Every structure is written in structure tokens, then in C-alpha cells.
Image 1 (tube, protein in one colour):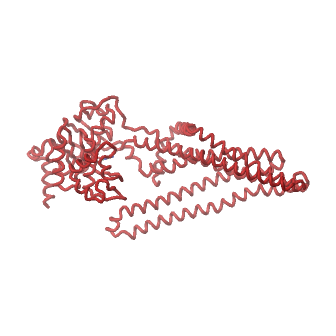
Image 2 (image 1 turned 90 degrees about the vertical axis):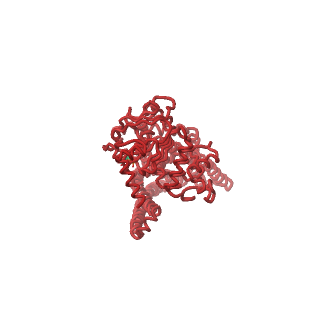
Image 3 (image 1 turned 120 degrees about the vertical axis):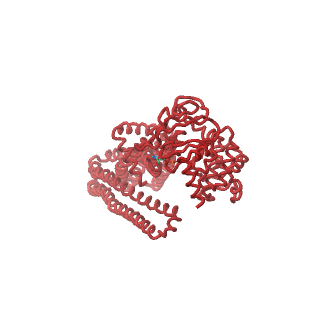
Length: 598
Ligand code: ADP
């Protein structure tokens, strides 16, 4: 939430030119969302209008009773009938109220659900470069605050607007029929009520947002401290963490107090304005009763209608705010929905053979101006193992991410089976790869499901075979529920090396043509590493393995090793050839051996 402003500002800047287009699409989209639920909306609206019309009868019945009592023409029988009428009306109103609550509120929740799903599906189509620019917290803010603002605008605002309109027109007409002059007089303070409600609403909303932000700063801080509790304790940093927390807790309390103050000031003001009309009625209307121009029953009915009017006048101001907030939120959501995935499918159908050719590849990350790969060229026939090594930051990960088009390489630089990868369909290209990134990520699922991730057709025996291949089977069996043990906060905590091996088994489950291990064995001891690599070479005959590592011991058995230094391909060959050459690789190897011995 804290970063929400950043995205909003960025999006806001983007809207300077396309603002009107966005606003038009926003309104169209809102219209479409409402139209998709028109039956439920219609039933809900009928219920709402039903409540409004029915409640208009109650003052008329009271008027009849009072006037008959005043004139002495009332009989107990008649009074019971009138009382029964009021009860019947209350029951009818109850039924109608259920209809609008269920259908109108239900629809707004369904609209929120549809929009949330659309947003989620769209966010999943956006590639890594998009997520380099935005923060997860910002995306969360859109998925929560903005969507609930749209729900309020489509649900509460529609409801309140129609309710207010029907009630206002009906009660003003009935009042005017009783006494037009008195109606005009008593209505005088009411527009003021609408304006102050709109004004008050804006201030309360700003304060309320500040409260929410302060609260999310507070929870972020607590979450950070407890996620990093080991670091905090190791550095004996508890006191200063407590200090930060106290500051945020104070901020939270202060914002809440400011909100309470605003309510405290404006609440009575609004009530005072609302009672001004009643005061005018007492003075002017009471005078008319004394002079016999208005019956007592009419006076009481009039006062009931006037009270009915207070809510619509307040609602009008509130609705304006809800709609403004809802459309602003919808604008922000539209900006995301209109962000096209920068990495697009090419025109060529079919799955290419997994032979890679890279020609004079230069690459600069989008939004930066430092070239990180400088004219890389190499070829790789299907089958065999390619090693890629070099110091941290030399461009190894960038190179394989480009092969999969997680970032887009310049056209005409990377070919798969002779076709430029930019011309291929993305699923066809990415389907060739099984990728184990540097930072392994496991989901909060049982271990077996983490291995068979995204596929229902991998039998347990296959999952276990893969686990044996990556030498983790025994460790998994030692967990409380074996392969069904849950991973993550509510389950077991895996060590770095265990996570890496589960992630490799996951990549193997798709039996990929090209397996990419990006420093994926860095937390595994060298003995286990060697046996896993040997098993991969044996078990994946005819398939390609790309093994990236800064440790030369990891790549030494590869058929060809590429050596990168600061984005340039400085050497290539087998381990023995490279040692014989006595260049960069040989230096790197000697240095790492010395380190290992030390
Ligand atoms: P390696 O895998 O060899 O450690 P990387 O390919 O991760 O190296 O990084 C190569 C260079 O590219 C580094 O200077 C790094 O800072 C930069 N880099 C990596 N990812 C990004 C990114 N998403 N945006 C901008 N620069 C990046």
C-alpha cells in the first residue's frame, strides 16, 4: 500500500494523453459489467423501489388514525385494521429488502469477483520486465482497495442513488400535494445537507485512507521483523526494532484519533442541519395547525415525509464521492488491463527442434542503458550438456532468460531449430525448457505436488523416481508425512539444498528437451552434486542440459563450457581444453581449488 502512490503517480502520468480514452473505456467497462448481470439488477431494483413505495404508505395510515381520533370518528376495530395494515406493510418491506440486499449486493460482489479474475488473469500474462517496474505491494493495493471501490460504486452507489431519487420524488410530491408553501420552506436547509455530506465524505475518506496506510505500515514492519527474526537476534537489534515499531504504532493511533475528531466535528453538524428542517416544520407547520389550515394528522405525516427526505439528501452527497472513487479506481485498473504483454507470440506455428544458435547477441535490460551482454555467439546441437560459467554478474542468467524469452532478445540473434525465437509461439518455445532458477521457489503444497507441479498426470511412482534421481528420496521419506508433507510456513522448512533438489525434480517432471539449471546446485555439497549430474547425464540421453554455475567443479563434466566475463564470451571448450589454454577459466579453476582447500 505504501508504494500505491508510486504506481498511481506513474499511471497518472501515463493518463495525461490517454486519460479521456481510459475514462471512456472505464465507463464502457462499468456499463458492460452491470449489463452482464441485468436480470439480478432488475430484480434487486424492483425490490428497492418496492421498499420505497411501501414505506410511503405508513405516514398516510398514521395520518388517518390521528385525524379520526381528533375528530372522534375512530373505532377500536378500525384502529386495529390500520395497525394491521402497518404490520403487513412492514412484512412486505422486509421481503423487498431481502430481494435488494441479495440481488443488488450479490451482483456487486459478483462484479468484483469477475473484475478481480480478469485482473489476475491479465497480470499473469505480463512478463518479468513488467514486474521489474512494479512492486508486488502495489499490485496487491489494486487487487484490494481499487476493486472494493469499484464494488462500492457499482453496488452501494447505484443502490443509494436510485433509492434516494425514488424516495425524494415521491415524498416531495406527497408533501407538495398537502401544502406546497410549507414544502418549499422546510426543504430550504436540505441542499446544504447534500453539500456538507459531499465535503465531509471527502475529508473522512482521506483520513480513513491515512488510517489504512498507517495500519499497513505497522503490519509490514511487524512482518519484516518476524521474517528476519534470526538477523534481528544475531545483531541484538531488538531495541531499535521496538523503537521503529513504537513509531508506527503511534502513527496508527494518531491517524485513528484524527479520524475520530473528524467524525466528532462533522457528525453533529450534519445532524444539526437535518434538524433545521424539522424546526421550520414545527414553527411554520405548527402555526398552520393552530390556524386550522392543516390537520394534526397531516402535520404528523408531513414530519414523517420530511424525515424520509433527510436520508436521500445525505445519500446524494455520499453517492457523488462513491462514484468519483469508483471511477478513479476503475481508471487505475484499466491502465493495468490495457498494458499489453511486451513479449508477444510470433507468427510461426509448430514446435522447433531443440537446437540452439546464438548470433552476435547484444542485450541491454529495458529501462536501463548498460549493455550486459556483448556480442555472444555459439551453437548447441540437441543432446549433451552445456556448461556456462563466469563470475557473479557476468551475464549467465541473462543469457538463459533470453533463450526462453523471459526478456526479449533483439530479433535475428537467437534461433531454435533454425527459426528466430521471436517468430515462435511462446508456449511452443517455453515448452521445450525445464527451468530451475537461481532462487528456488516452492509453493505451500505437499512435496509430491511441488514436484508434479501443474500436472495431474504424473504418477506417484514417477515422482519418487525423480526424487531418487536428485538424491532426495530418503530425506523426503524421513519427513512426518513423507511425500505428503506440506512445505512452507504451515509445514516443514526445507534446507536450501533440499529446496534446490525438489526444484530440479519439478523441472524433470515435464521431461523437458532442454533442462536449465541456473546455479541450482549451489547449496548442495560437491559429492551429491556430482552424483546428481552423473544421473542427469545418464537419465537424459538425447536431451540437452544447460548447467550454469560459478563453481567450475559443477561444469567440469560438460561437453562444452562457455566462459563469460563481464558480458563477453571469453573462452569455450571442454574442461581439459580450457585448462590447457591456461586462460581465464584455468585461473578461475585454480582460485576455486585453493579456496576449497583453505
Ligand atoms: P549472473 O547470472 O552471471 O550472476 P546476471 O545475468 O544475473 O549475471 O546479471 C548480469 C548483469 O545484468 C548484472 O550486472 C545485473 O546487475 C544486471 N541485471 C540482471 N537482471 C537485471 C534486471 N532485471 N534489470 C536490470 N539489470 C539486470
